[in-house]
Length: 265
Image (cartoon, rainbow, N blue to C red):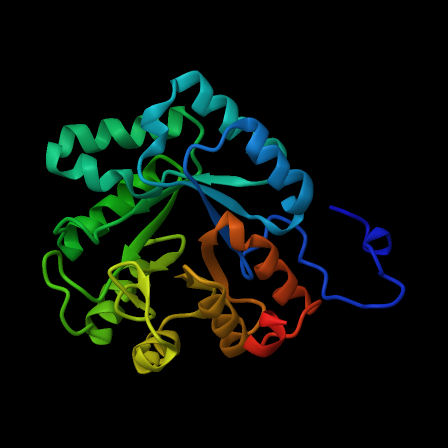
């Protein structure tokens, strides 16, 4: 980690230094659509102190060779950054139990640390997801089930109680963290809504029932990121795009005012 005294303007503008890795709170995960080693090196060299994990998004690990996946994952490990499978399991689940177990075993072999158990696009019972959490734990990886208030094919009103019950079941099953899907809370159909349309009541109800350190919030915009940090403090866990990493790090550290007027300026 960069020495605090060596950071630019450190004698003028004090900041909140990130906790040493490995951290359990104040985590930042960024997505990678199969970024090359060169692309990841740029991120790591610039802001690696502020990244806790990288998620292969949209099953993009299927686009490159096993050796390349291992190489990239090993590079991230060497820089104290864990690696998540992303939501590829949603593609695997319809193929049956044998395929799912092979997927988990190969994830371990390829150097993944975190297995995301997504269910936004497929129907998975709570009990089946509990079983998946236990299967991931048995392979000594970290299970991160995704929780959404919507059912596949039903983009109606979000049920915070449904989300809370499922999250509580995942915590009891031994999940590492719980990923909270932003659709229905902060956005709809992957398009950010006006802040006035956000379901803050659902967010607060979830946050009041599930321990803070267990929750990972998906945030697809700087506006959502700013609100999460303003509302829950610098220890909130955030998953976002790599393009927003600098904003997350700056807001956590207090180098920049967390308000829209200042951001736009």
